[in-house]
Amino acid sequence: MKKSTIAIALAVSFLLISSGVVAVVYFADNPLAKTGDGRDKLDRLMADIGVLQHHLDTDPLAVELVNTAGRFVRLDDFRGKIVFLNFWTTWCPTCITEMPSMEKLHRKLSGKNFAMVTVNIKESALQVKNFFKKYQLTFTALLDTTGGVSSEFGIGAIPTTFILDKKGRIIGRINGPREWDSRESVAMFEELADK
Image (cartoon, rainbow, N blue to C red; front, side, top):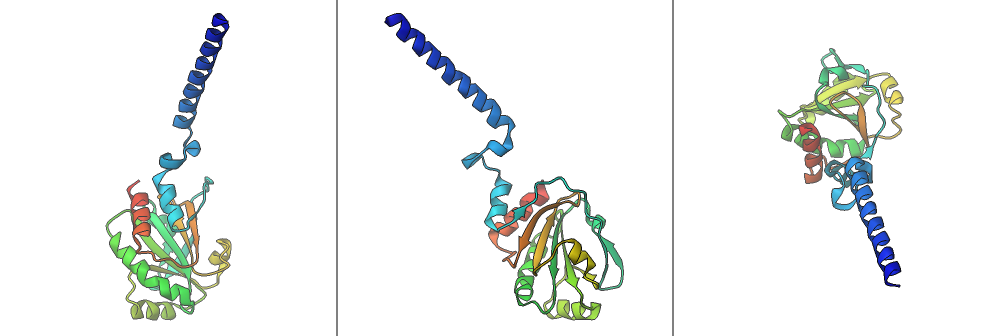
């Protein structure tokens, strides 16, 4: 009886140790397996403000639109920066509500690897210029006068914001307005810009 008890104890010990080694190897090499305190800081920050993450390896976006000064601007021009890409109109109440907080975020992250770009849908340069003057906005405004780019992005409601990585690929989408100058939002964009 003693020999069988010792054999069982050794077998159980071996299984426990083996399981521990497998778990350490699995969790160390698999970031998707991490939970709790091991959860990625950026994932937590994105979840805090309701970012729908895109984990697909997409191609960089090839978009070229005219700005309010009549010059063509490409999203490629912002390569190397995290891009906050917001679709909006001057008549949208929630767009108007979120714009001041966007300006605050834009100013807070000035000098970092961050660019704020807005795409106005089907309005004139004069309407957008007057809106920017009224609300004292200083970030980039592009014009989607035909609505073609907005359709390509699948914009069904405004405001809609995309986050592009430093290579120009979509990494997140936010439907609806946010307080963009909130502590959580600033922390998320700082984390992205510093990576």
